[in-house]
Image (tube, protein in one colour):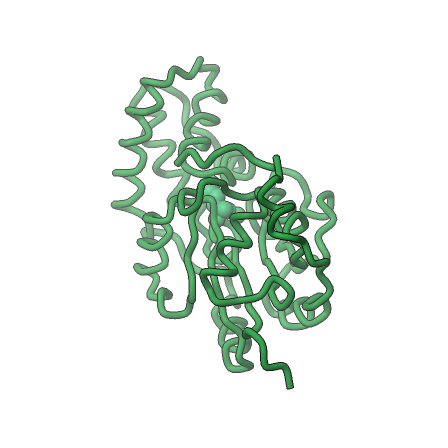
Amino acid sequence: MHTGQPPLLVFDLDGTLVDTAADLMATLNALLVREGHRPLPFSAVGSLVGQGARVMLERGLRANGVEVEEAVLARLFDDFLEHYSANIAAESRPFPGVLDAMDRFAAAGWRMAVCTNKMESLSRRLIGELGLTDRFHAICGGDTFTVRKPDPAHLIGTIAAAGGDPQRSVMIGDSRADILAARNAGVPVVAVTFGYSDVPVADFTPDRIIDDFAALWEAVHGVVGTGAPVSVAAIRQSPAAGPARD
Ligand SMILES: O=C(O)COP(=O)(O)O
Ligand SMILES: [Mg+2]
């Protein structure tokens, strides 16, 4: 019997745990239209989401051929946060099967945490409105630490905050940032195919790929404990990502 820290599942939020695309796109498009720009099609979500709200806004403006000025971006970012916060769980729902999967892991003694590039305050609000807060031992956003995914320190920090051990943790995500953060942290990673990546997740060679949370149990048990230990000092020196910006 293993007497160390409990095993831990670390979920990405947007596109992995919760289907947030409709509410994110509704806020972005409301602002774009208000500013006299074109709304973007829902299918653009994969190229917009993944690096937080500020980057989403920047990309939405660029897609309209707008030269993005810092002052304009700062003003629109505040409006984005206000509009999105007020509508954060209008349409957003956990992906099919994820709650059942979490129940099964929790019953087997696993802890859960969230490691997302969404701002921590927005993440807590969304998870709270969906009634899921009590399921998580840690919720770490893109602004919780000084770095964020794909920097491995974001994942390592989340694991520490949840009382976990990288050697007994598995990351579950939908994007390049998730897979790279996990790889750089020496943590095995399961990728979902139903999230918001504009490139097939297989291109980033995650350890396992699932199309449905019904397959999570098998996938996680196939990879847990297979990660390579990575020293924290090596992670601190990682040039993987710039500073958190929102
Ligand atoms: O909000 C984003 O852009 C990304 O969020 P995620 O890291 O939960 O996918
Ligand atoms: Mg995601």
